[in-house]
Image (cartoon, rainbow, N blue to C red; front, side):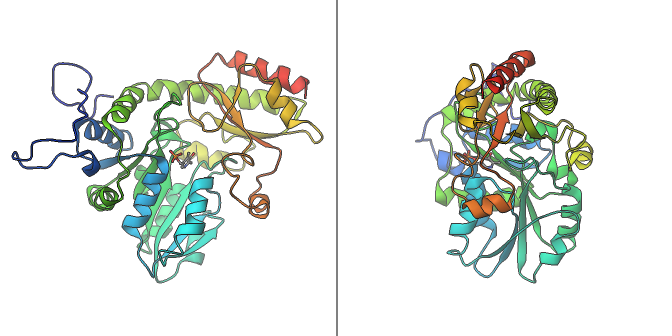
Length: 365
Ligand SMILES: *Cc1c(COP(=O)(O)O)cnc(C)c1O
């Protein structure tokens, strides 16, 4: 919480929105160079949270992801992606990498599978764990060990876990990415992204990012700095609520299936318990066949049907219509993302209020 504090009188980093700064002192301070005090204060906090050497704050999660791709991949390189990807990331892989002349393979990444897909020109492996929206768990240390022996850079999107529940750099990952729009911001009122790694990677990524211009302004940086002070508290509560809501849904007669790594029958439960210190506030579930999803969503009073996730309010959505709308039905089906799948981002409300609301809406569907 105290990392990245700029010396001064108060506990809050002073807001410095200036784009025109004196250059005679040496370093040129300019927001697009990612070096204003508000950007640096947050980047240092994020680096401390992820046990990394340095961080970079970007204008969105996608800006963080594309900056990493552009900085590290060049024509002729090959990259491996887990097939369980956030919709926007999947879209980038499918539509932009080929134009960059980068070869790629989408695989079911798990312990042992990386080496089977590695080529001489493989430079990068990229995955999310827990994944969006099915909360698939991948063994981070196992993937990193395989990658290390082949000199492949491991990039992990840690958005769902948050740095409170999981620190991939400690398990061997090279670069961690966050959509700061979600848990880091935590109040559904800002958009940003982050990259955390060692100094050399961050220098390379910052240099590329500066030419693409995906920086944040002082106001967003300052809002995020405020949010980060309560990240640990919010996530602790979301872990508790997530577990309780997952268990309540699992025992509900209208619910066919629940995906939550904190449930002992989740296929990734053991690995999650090993590499995460909390199971998080994200879960998804399927209603019994024949139930009316729309009626269920319209019947909710407290839980709000909205896109995005990670905020203090409990929100709900259908991945088919939102985060994964750009995937073809065939690809969605191959990935187990059914038309009736519902994703829940559990907030910090009293858990019984959340469960009661879900229950009354389920009864009417
Ligand atoms: C939302 C999200 C992103 C993209 O972040 P934006 O801030 O919307 O650009 C990337 N990865 C995951 C897992 C996400 O949930």
